[in-house]
Amino acid sequence: MSDPLAEIVSLLKPVPSIAKLVVAGGTWLVERRELGSPFYCAIVEGHCLLTIGDRSPIRLAAGDFVLVPQIHAFTMSSLQPPPRGTLPQRLETSPGVFRLGDPQAAAEVKAMVGHCAFEANEERLLSSLLPDILHVQNESRLAELVRMIHAETVGLLVARDMILTRLLEVLFIDALRSAGSATASPGLLRGLADSRLAPALRRIHQNPGGEISVEELAEAAAMSRSAFFDRFRREVGVPPMEYVTSWRMALAKDMLLRQEAPLIEIAARIGYASASAFNVAFTRYVGVTPGAFARSY
Image 1 (cartoon, rainbow, N blue to C red):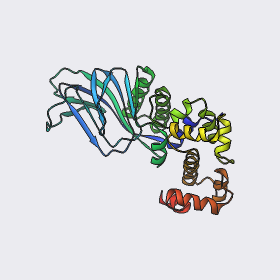
Image 2 (spheres, rainbow, N blue to C red):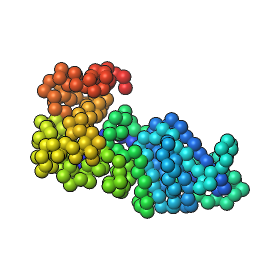
Image 3 (cartoon, helix red, strand yellow):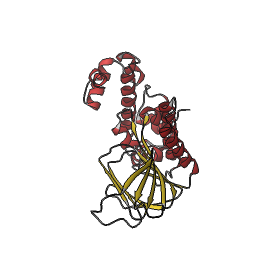
Image 4 (tube, one colour):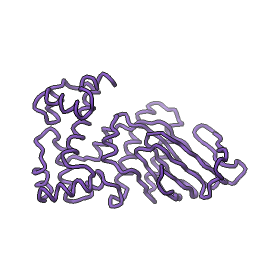
């Protein structure tokens, strides 16, 4: 049976970037802006505040894990942040280990944080399918995965990049399936948690090159066409055929970049009767022709 969640994470190809162990004491604050990259954090000890963009602060405690697939601005701070304008105190005490706040103050917070990147340039897929933020509590497995990523990052052992890539894929999948789907923003998680929509989503992923229509997907969901359409758009966040198109184009981009098949074969694999029809659809969706896209990367 097709597994849409695993397929999407595999297609996005998370790759390692930065992993740190952060120890903090006293009053402290770290601010980052315009990162545009996935961010994750596991709290090992203590409490702190995480503020993402213009959202309300989230109080994090030991055992909490946070994953933000796309992040452009955030701050982490002590529960009582320092006064505005205070210069940040940050010291790397050993490779991959950073001390925040007054170095003379008792260490009250320990957290493992990291950034990664997606090899696939699929911001459109990310924003339409994955939740804005995942906050999971008391999942020791996630913290252990972050520990392994940190150890592998600073260890500089052979086959490091391969192991980190696999660990990041497992971390993303485990975090996504650990999150409460009922509280997730509209996207793939909400759709897969819906007993009616899940069969339709699996049908799309099982054979993206086949004939797919709203009527057929509604039948797989055992719903009327109109009820299915409304429910899919509400839970997944996009209309059914828009989801189909975005997934087909994501697959096409991946095949173009890997140069694994001629254009006519790629077209057939994702449901287009001819290379010219695929060329028109791809250009309309992506903004450049398939050939130009492949050359640009």
